[in-house]
Amino acid sequence: MRFARFVHAGGVSFGVVEGDASGLTIAEISSLPFEEVRFTGQRWALADVRLLAPIFSSKVIGVGRNYADHAAELGNEVPKEPLIFIKPSTSVIGPNDAIRLPPQSQRVEEEAELAVVIGATGARRVDRAGAEKAIFGYTIGNDVTARDLQRSDPQWTRAKGFDSFCPIGPWIVTGLDVSDLEIRCEVGRDPEAMEVRQIGRTKDMVFDIPTLVSYVSHVMTLLPGDIILTGTPAGVSEITSGDTVSVSIQGIGELRNPVVSLD
Image 1 (cartoon, rainbow, N blue to C red):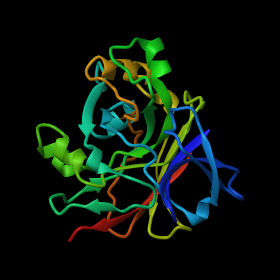
Image 2: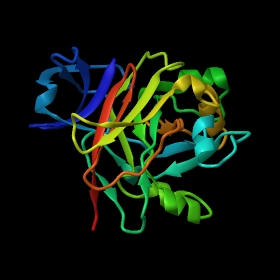
Image 3: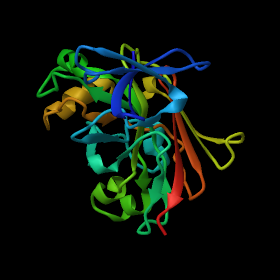
C-alpha cells in the first residue's frame, strides 16, 4: 500500500494512494498509517490535494558513506561499521516544498537516498530479525548537504541540519522488496531537459537495511515514524537557486523539490 499525508479543503489527513499514473486518487483514513486502516469514505483526485512529508518523525538518522563509490568520490574510505548522524525534524519538508539555500554555505549538494520508516513497535536493541519486523515501509529521501561546511566542521550537524535539508516523500510504500532497486537523481531548470546526476542500486549498499536498523537501535531507541536515510550512491553535485531536484526510486515514485536562495 501507499500511505500519504495531505492537505485538502477540510484540513490535513492521512490517506491511501490508489490507482496508477493515469489516474491517482487518495482515500482518507482516520488512523495513523501503521495502525489498523480505517477508511472514512472521503476520496480526492491526487491532483486536487497537496502532499506533505508522509509521516511525523521524532528524528531522522542519516548513514554516511554507505555506498563505496560515493565514499571514493569524496576521497573517503568505507567505514568499518555504519557511520550515523542526526538530521533534526525541522529539516524535513515534503514534495514540491522548496530547498532553501543558506547564506552560510557556498556549495550545497543533493544526496538521493532510500528512506526506511519505522513502524508501530519501534525498535530498541533489536537483532536482524527484530529489525525487519520494526520496518513499516519505505519512502524517498534527499539528504541535502552543505558540502563546504561538512568539510570545515569537525562534525556534520550544521552541514546536514538546515531547515529544508531533508525532503521526504511522496508517500510510504509497504511490502516492497528493496534489495535491488534503482535510485536516480536528476537536476535541472527545464522539466523536459533534466540532467542525470546519480544512478545507483540498493544492492550496492555497504551495510544492508536490517543491519542499519539493528545498529541504530543499539545506540538510540527508534520510535514509530522515525526515518533512517540509508546512504547515497556516487554523483552528488552542486544545486543552485532555480534548479529542481528530482529523486526517483523504482517501486516507490518520484520526489521533486525546487531550489531557492534565502538571500
